[in-house]
Length: 414
Image (cartoon, rainbow, N blue to C red; front, side, top):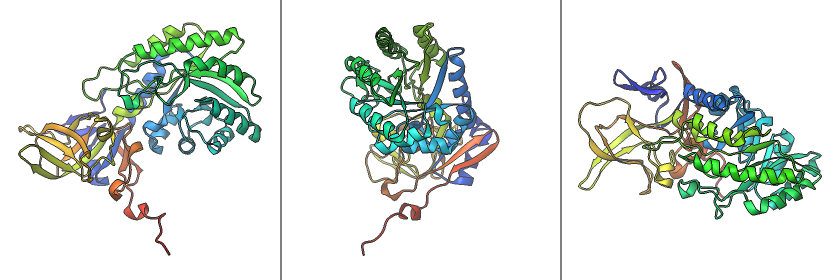
């Protein structure tokens, strides 16, 4: 169910007109539906039924405290890739005992921070990381629970920038090296082997790559068991895609059915790390048309949002639907939706047929994931405000930055 729809010719999020959000909080502005996040999380959780499992939301998709707080209240776990994300999870009310720590470059300080917080597990991505973690755990008087993130060399059939499970990618431990590293981990005094995992990429629209990766993990599980190394969980990572344009990602229930069928009655807890799939369609970027430029080759709608607010189109040539906040019955023209940043890559959409006037509001759809979390201050542009809509109520969950804040940690030379 979409929580963004037209009522009396005006686009709403739940029971609130987006024009009301713009009037109160200005533009550009990210707007989220609490009901959409809640509904999708519950669908994930319910799809795995009685199978012992933990949904660990991938914080990198959207790390805003208000979003994390909604998920924490639902009982979600969290997948983090930095000490900063751990601090955000805890500030939002998340349970550190439901946190898995991924990422190829964990620092000693981040490891100590996570050990002191008593997180659920470290997803270890290299031999050197494992050795460092053992030393840090010894220094702090802790034992680190670990899962080796294995690179299964499975093609996720997605954009090359977001593929992470191939041999040429920087992520994970090569499949053929994993068994030997588990043997080393078994002999480390401050390491406790807990599981095995992988993450093969993002925005996957087929079940088959997930199943292929899980099959390779389960083969390793059996080989480990034959050597007396028992695991308590298997982490299949995240990556389930959403519909931006014409994609047909599998239903959550079909995805869950395929994974649980492969696991069978093995006494292994299943960990999942969805990010985009939980929040992607729960948010829009609200922007206002500043100028219309009609040219011989192209028409441009210059809006007040830019690539610093939503990087995905410039970075991946990603497609986002663009909807006028007030529907028009008149015919339109093809416009490139562009921002004011001084880069030719500063576009949010290309060749969209819209009936536009200066001052109109536009909603860039499916912007809840990798929007605000990848935003920047390029061109000294303050980052956008963020609003969570809950039924008929609007909650400001991040104030718009001020230019003075951007300069507050800088100083002139003496």
